[in-house]
Length: 178
Ligand code: MG
Image 1: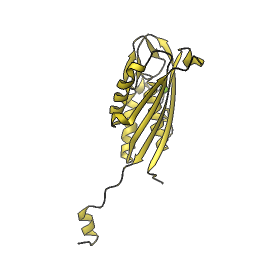
Image 2: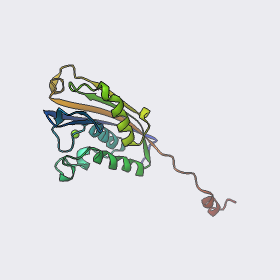
Image 3: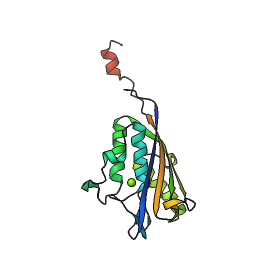
């Protein structure tokens, strides 16, 4: 098995929107007037980031790991998908270097939430806020996102292999160096 120093991953997610309920992006509530139609909380930012992490590591996609008909995930915050994915990444001795996310939404306007989403996502990933970039735009009136019927997100992530520890002194001694 190859263990390259860097690996890159990409993820995309889209959910239809409905009136009522609440909309969560990157773990932050951005609206209490609309909600995604989803099995979990439908957080498109986290879903895209999870897919990007899985993609970087060659681990398939979010649906393979967290089926959208599994009763365990019904109504759950999407941290339940991100947390085990980040843990598996760490167990494989890789660390997130940076994440870049584009959110596409005609409504609500997200400009005021970008800082909060950045901080939230950074905390979930265990990285500094400057390792996370959030972009928010409209879809210029095009298609379902542009009509305000859906919300989408794209994410790119870079992960790097954590260097292995140099041999400890007792091991060097064991090998005959003294
Ligand atoms: Mg999704």
